[in-house]
Length: 153
Image (cartoon, rainbow, N blue to C red; front, side, top):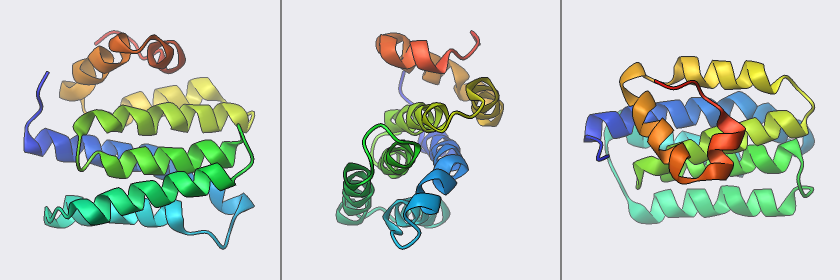
């Protein structure tokens, strides 16, 4: 399913929301490291202006993923940083938006928080007309579908 530029921006807003929702897990453990936050800010700048510079988008994504690699393995902080790295990549490829949601749920799970509440929050924030797109992406990746468990649109 191909999405329009407008829908890509809506997916980017959703991805940024998903990443920002779990960002405190990273910031609490690594308050001096702003790479994941910068990735979300970079995505927000693209959403606001439409100005796309691949080097900036890619650099922000790679920096957030580097922060994740430096965080404790399988921790809420690591997954939160990965959510930010996936979110900013939505400016380049819309399907990266699901990565922000997936890592967001992984962050909540690693923190021992309410995963069902996070799933519901994510699904409620996903524009209704894009739910089928996300469900199709999840269907192609069983690990995503198993973790996300969004209701059928």
